[in-house]
Length: 73
Image (cartoon, rainbow, N blue to C red):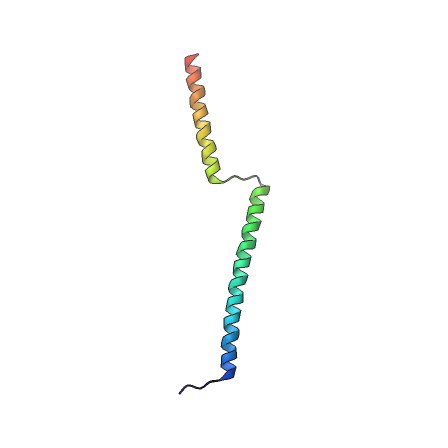
């Protein structure tokens, strides 16, 4: 037999609201952490991996060109 109990109804509503609030707080914390990490990376003059790889390839090409020019001289 199922009865309608207002106390349990309110507890269920509060629990649902608390879970939603906890999820929102988690998302806010994640966003704040990412912002701090981005700020740290900018302050340390760090570069992204793809920028590093592009620069590495460019340097390899320049070294090959210098080696070719030294061989011709």
